[in-house]
Length: 370
Image 1 (spheres, rainbow, N blue to C red):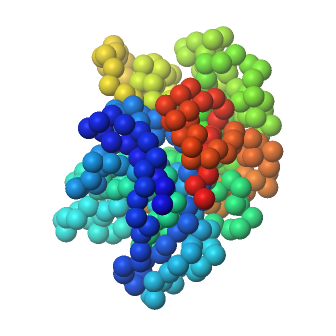
Image 2: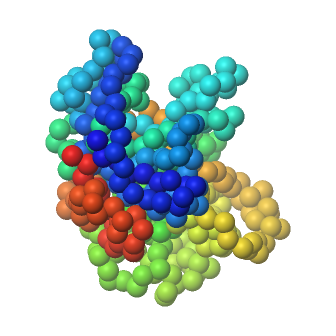
């Protein structure tokens, strides 16, 4: 079978041939991989900024945003059946008995750092024609979501972040509950940094949770992304016209910043303007560049005097995948054209070089694997 892989020691990105995997345990599931989304992480791995092959292998099969079809199941599999569409999870638990998170199947909060991630760290990924994995990592997707299901994994980033937001904001004695739309006395304001796939999906999740949502990105409006955002009831602000310090004047108290750029200089500049009782969510992993200057005194004063919270969110557990599948279905009903437009194009495996190494445009490019 064919797979798209990197060989870090030789700095090579290529299509390789691998033996087709077989079911080995009673709870194994075999998937015919249908699609894999191309994201910034894949491109950074292909630029050899990171990415670790499995032990004993020179190569790492990449890809973590995926959709597969069940073609075979082990005798004790109960979660899925042949013919089902599934999105597999990415992170696998560390081996240590003392890691409470991993032993509770919450490897997204692993504290040893010895977890593995498919397509990223020590486990082959999903840009391959067949995969075998345990059923516990499979998330069932309705057949009617076939055309947009590859967006499930990137949406999990926002889903995990929002779950934590509502948990944190229960500290406030008003209008911040786990069911936010039942408390309409105050409409929360959110700023999304970046209009890439993670930012646009995050904006959809925020609008769906009744945030007054603003996406702050570089390109001047109107443009296809600004038009998409307007169609879902969000606002687009160009950094070419509005500087970060002007955002509070235009928006009001900023309750939430959802960072989706990986640009540390913009993010820490924006942190100055986070509002009272606000939360700042980091999702990006910036490459190693030169140091930047940060006004740590101002940052510390704001965190203390304005009751602010800053946290990072990475990968996701089963709850976030299930929420993502549910909400992606809701988005499709509310904004069918906007959701479809997130996927720019579908391309054969042979197009991997342009998609992973070139300057491919659009929002989300998808590789067809079978």
